[in-house]
Length: 425
Image 1 (cartoon, one colour):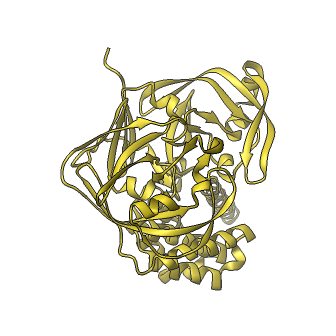
Image 2: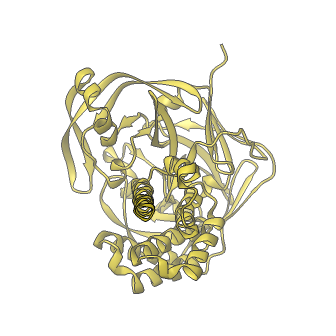
């Protein structure tokens, strides 16, 4: 009897352990990093084997921008626990290692790790992932002899900005003896410049040709250039990498609207903290810890934790997006409410294959909470189908309509939080 009881308890423990692993794996694959962190810290998972905890921690450190620590954990796993990892898990760790190296401006290490993945673990990647890895590696190989980007902030900088015809924030950027207005966009994976302005700013060309998808959805041949030094107020950025696009790739409405260049994520994150109000971008001399932890970066995609009803949802956010929209996961989870309160319409979605139509709903009001502050989404569109793989992972994308409800938005890359400061009465 005791033996039977012992076996029942033992087998039950194995079953519960397998269920815990399955749930953690599911949270990781769906990019629910905030929830994964809470689950990993809960008592129910305190008996996980050490290597399992390290595996999930490698991804969490990456998401919360502790990149060096993420690589340390990955190296430890591959040195001490490789036999306990499947080829698929090893491939995932190595892909995350590449991401860490890129964000740390360690281009040669990113190139070598990419080559390792394509040589030994290509079978665990999809055909699309292999193509992306090969194309990205042209960039990392081309940059392998470029010194890491560095940023010096000599004092608080207040940069007056203007909004262009598309409503995008433009800031003055100084290159040697010339100053040009560039779009300031946290959603841009790399900084971008047109061929004509690459000449005007005297960028150092690397003659590295690769394919990239432009804003229009069309694939273009891009080049790489290095700004040995650029300035924004009291900020000096050295060795900044720019993708150089044909002028036509950043020209719209038959030339009525053009973009000269874009200051993207790699430059913005080294500022450590940016505060955006109605007319200025402010970069303090020293980043401030406000004890909020609601921000992460998925590859090069900023992600924020948003409260809706009693749920905590992960949204992407983009200083270049005018309006907030909600994705298919939001529709899936709140379908009954949306079908009842929403108005259906055909939504046009642009992509590489052109314009497609999909059924969507428009909700008159959605009340959310961001960084402890209430906000209202008005006439917000809810997509019922995903137009990109990331749309299927995140509940929506916060745009300027949310940011404009506050006096100031703070994005902090050192302590990983986004804060919204209400207007004073």
